[in-house]
Length: 372
Ligand SMILES: *Cc1c(COP(=O)(O)O)cnc(C)c1O
Image 1 (tube, protein in one colour):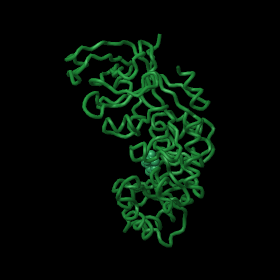
Image 2: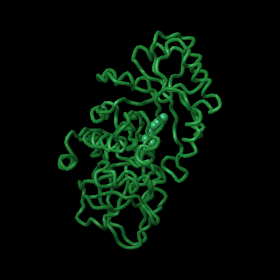
Image 3: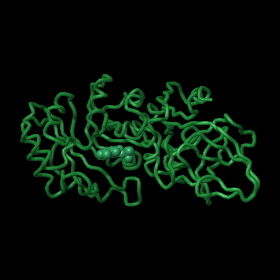
């Protein structure tokens, strides 16, 4: 008798979202970013939906090896590069493309003397100030990389801080163009936001992550509504109890919700130990949304470890066993994230290992019928 909570990964949605990226960036090849266990979806499950990509971008060597074991022969990019000299032979063994963002990594390649050819993406810091060579040192880094034993192709790489925001990318693009002027080689600059909104930065390869999973780079679902993205993850549970509240009754830890009228509430088998955000409010003007019996309602009270409570006023027929959708399929994950002060990225990545996951290989309506 398993707890009724479960997540579904929708493979047709992943494939659809990759098509959306292809339409937005028709001349670029696509690194499908599958870091963090494919944003919580599972590398193996995501790979089945995204195998039409040109390459996969991730951070973790074990995830890269898993892709090779799944039969992926194409390029794999280590977005943060490698960390120790002993990693260099593994790059060769598994034919991994690596970001190189600092002198220490160049020195490690020099010491390891790979036979090559090693494909590298030389990272330029254009203003994010996280990884990358400063603009003034980039040309020297490129010259040095080119002469290192075993180094084959060198792609110019940078990352945008505000492709989804008001500041935009112009200031970083200017630095990129100045620093790479007259240097041969392809370039890769664009995360999801730049892929959707800044075609002038597409270049040879784009690097979308969040949009492949159906999330919005801005955290606001309406911003991506016209692109036809579909949610790749949905989280479902059921009501396991119903309570009738009288005026003045409170709900949950800290008594943060107080009934102002008689009302029915439902108790859902889902809590923060499942990855649901504890900060999701069940009080105030903008309580977090949830679907019960397919009807949109909202949280009441504080999310606890294993349960959360919902207002049943809009769904009077709901009873124990009624289906609940926490996100995906009719309820954008970004709506839940926004109410909780975060972004869809974080919710996807936080899906807890205790939640059973199934894979839908058919399109959404059929899946829904199965899930119910
Ligand atoms: C995570 C990441 C991406 C993808 O970002 P999204 O906003 O999810 O599209 C692209 N490039 C690099 C270097 C990253 O670390």
